[in-house]
Image 1 (cartoon, rainbow, N blue to C red):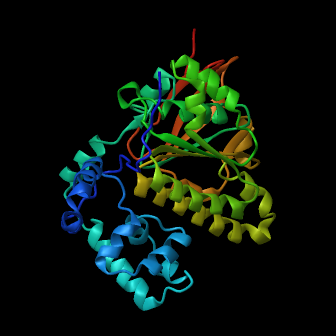
Image 2 (cartoon, rainbow, N blue to C red):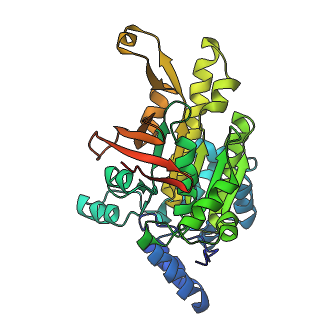
Image 3 (cartoon, rainbow, N blue to C red):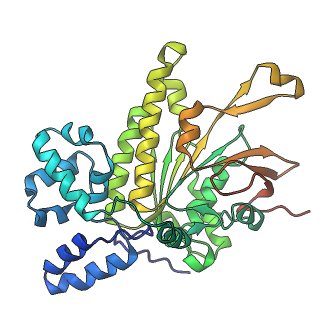
Length: 361
């Protein structure tokens, strides 16, 4: 199986072509027209350079790119103060930039029918286990945040490793035909795991590794900086998955005690907000893992109970929350803890030599 993932930034985010965009595309030279049309059909994000035709100076576009904005969607989705915070962008300029960006991005109301149609086009990434995919009604959803939480050794990182391979598979095989970005905060990333998972899917190990962009985050500020780099990379080639394993570990150690709790939660909230923006903007699946804390209150009489850390902030940011716990031997149990459309039930999967799979009775 040879994997040639195209280097064009095209993602399966719900198509956001608007009339303004069509008009802008038509003014381009005919050579670009075909390429533009293909991008429209794929519904990828609009590169920020398109704003030049709307009368935004190229110098300002460069400043915006340095400030971490690479697509028109990014500008349309953030509050104005984030844009005025960039050096050399006055309030007046920011207003014009946002106005032009909003013309290119459809941000008004649509009918539920139209939205339902767009939801039907959403791709799901296989987890490697048929049981687990069935529980998730297809797999990990692109364009939203899925949180995996559980104690150590419950299979969080193993699921991440398997997804890093399955996201590269063709769509009809439960993949996303895109590359994977992997941000590791605990040093648990193992490329050799990816190679053994790749063999199971008859993919070339070297190709699979080439399609995974890996970064180790050393502190919570660095973790945030990496997201800015991630958005630049996603603009250049096609990614279908962004993994942060674990999203909360560094916040847990960088901020300590009650005194720094509100600062920690605000910082964490901004990180999660940025993740959600990347999911909206590029239509990638975002998978974050979270650690747990023992609940030492009255509930402990029925055995030790754990809850995910990060409180309500992380609970509201994640679209789907999956609770993992150990089963017998290699088996693990995944329960849907919170989801807008999946019923609360559970599935059993196993951690095998070649990644996550189904448990054999």
